[in-house]
Amino acid sequence: MMLIMEDRYVMNNQKDLIKLSLPNKPEYVSVVRLTLSSIASRMGFDIEKIEDLKVAVSEACSNAITHGANAEEGNFDVEFLVYEEKIDILVYDKGKGFLVNQIEEPNVHNLKEGGLGVFIIKSLMDNVEFLQNKGKGTVIKMTKYVGDDFNEKYSQ
Image (cartoon, rainbow, N blue to C red; front, top):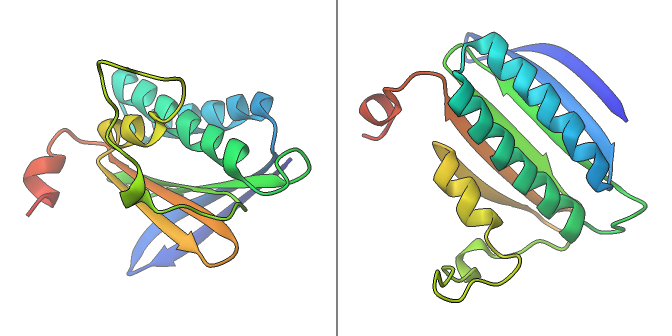
């Protein structure tokens, strides 16, 4: 496991960058959850939003572990970009990628195991992007704003 912390400046807004590189093993998802919980608490997120963040990041990490290349031998990476008003969480896998628009809406009358992760993530986060890293896997970028006025400020 590797933890790297860096300070960077983007468009005159300071942000902290925290990077994790973890073995493709489910037991390391808790490291990501604990790191995120600590960061979010320091930023001023309330307990309900912290729990939402932890569920969303757990789903993204589980997908990275399950669908990443060399599942048992490789790593998955997580980056936390910390701003004053929001946190961006990027989860990288090294799998073959997927087309998010080909994921079917879940049938609530006939639920099956698996397949709900993307919908859970989208329902808990303020913004979610799926980025294809040609031949190098998928990046899930999740954004959560600290304040309750996200819809008023950013949905225009």
